Length: 57
Image (cartoon, rainbow, N blue to C red):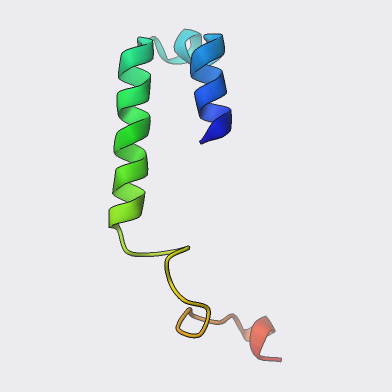
């Protein structure tokens, strides 16, 4: 997130995508909210997270 915000603020992302800063931040917000609402990943407790075979050894 921080790298993307920096890229928007520096203009690097805007040059590559053709987005305005407002559009870029809007898309970033949508991406963040979609990730948070998916119910997967970091919000799973370690005891219920799927373990890889390497973790079980």
